Image (cartoon, one colour):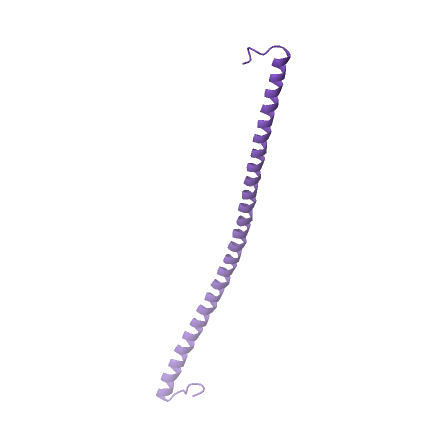
Length: 105
């Protein structure tokens, strides 16, 4: 087909081809912009979720520290209760011997 074109016809054909290719490139660039926009949206969502995970991890860690503190308190109270039971038992034994009466009895 190009062999039949001469002079101004060839220039006009070449110009039309360049315009068509520019339009195709413009469409391709617009498609790429849309794809990049979608990627950016996904990255922002990932970043947002990452912040939420970090925040929840901080809260969970704080809760674990609080639970550990409560466990330490329970262990201390259990030890105190055990010692009081032992002392009460010793006082009870002494009372049965007649030497000392338990407090409050």
